[in-house]
Length: 601
Image (cartoon, rainbow, N blue to C red; front, side, top):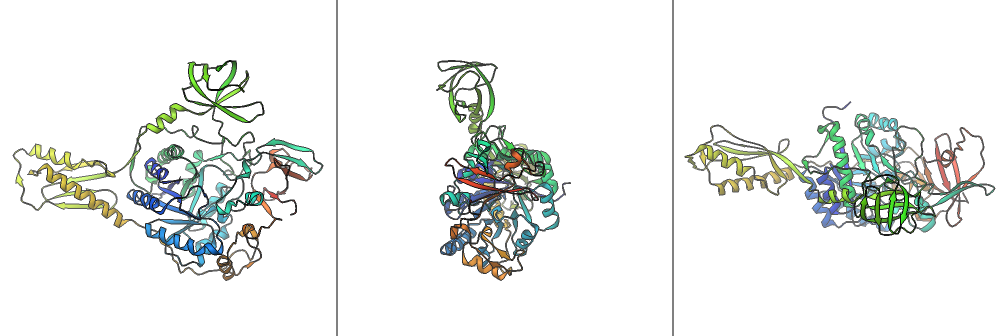
């Protein structure tokens, strides 16, 4: 049930300034972006100057800007991270997304803090603790079911952020050390090498192949678009799109799609302002995805992975009937375009591709190269040239509706809520010889808002208006009112501030091992003030080998129809990579969790 005052934020990723502006213009209520250091996506760093420009543009529409400072930190980085937060605060950033609890020991400004999913916010007790530290928001684990989400929203007074779209980590966020273990590239330091997107097989203790080679850890993409009403009813604060490495086209398409979906539930849910103007029809099946899943939202186990490929296959075009030179004839019709990209599985069953150079008929095309395409091959289109032409030509504009009123004493501009400015007509204007023309002039000139963020939604000139005001003077008044309205909007912008004096209290866990990702003495000191014993530092700090490399809801036993709850065959299983390196698979059946461990664990 939607409450009358309920708002729900659509949160979009931004790789850079271009993506941030695109997300805002497509209808995002907030964007999250990395600064030039300490973000969990090393390849998505941005200058302070660019962040300032994003903040200035976003705040015009009451769109919030969150910056990721969510890697674990080493002792020699603490002061730099602290200084960065102060700079971001001075730029007007709305919140910092963090992971490292050293933040609670720093001398920080009163900027809002959001606990990254990498904090592993997987129990109500942890979330209550973060609330006690005046953390404004927690990013909930992707693994949470709807019931677990409701347990938080209904029982803990804290903002909640839920991933609704994009790539899924196979591991519990913050609980993956696989990349660091095999190549010293730490996910918790923003440098994940994505070993989950590689080929693996599974063997038993006798070396027998149980699951043949495939992309056995490569998750499908998250898509909760059919569950938005449930999430709104659950009282979630923010709906988050993943993708800080995605390009402008991806961001525009996906944000536009979810803006329309949320607005179809209720247009009153939007916490930002500004109407979106464009003639583009979004389609989330056209941009990169690995196949879609709603993951564990319904609490039911299903096939979460795409074992065939970690790449984008696209939409099925049809089966090849014949190949002659570079000409392919299909068994069926399909609407191809010149420059479409075609994907197919080659003889080694790896995804390959080519480009359409000519469309000869509905069932016949010429391609750039088709050496590996044989009769019987299934073709897919993973780049629709017509769709992308439409997307790139679309002119997205975001404009704030303005109500304009004029009478013989004043001109009033009102944008949103109490954002009102007024110009008094206290000069001695002459009475117009033609009052109808005078009314028409002032109505037309006041409505010419040009490239500003406003558009005239309603312009009312009183019936008794009869002043002659030169067009140049009306234009001066209009420009002045727009500037004053922009200034008022900026001055009235409301920030959520954190109480920096929040005192440490008892942490719900007492003996802390490597999985708490403690990598500096400030975090250690903080935990100890909370009554904890820090037994181990993070693997990134100590190069620890005998650990759980990954904790995941994805279960290879279940995928292979060997669930121990249904099949008592408890033979030991091992994951084997492309270099014949083995990893132990262990199963916590009570909690439906699989662990990938080093062989010496």
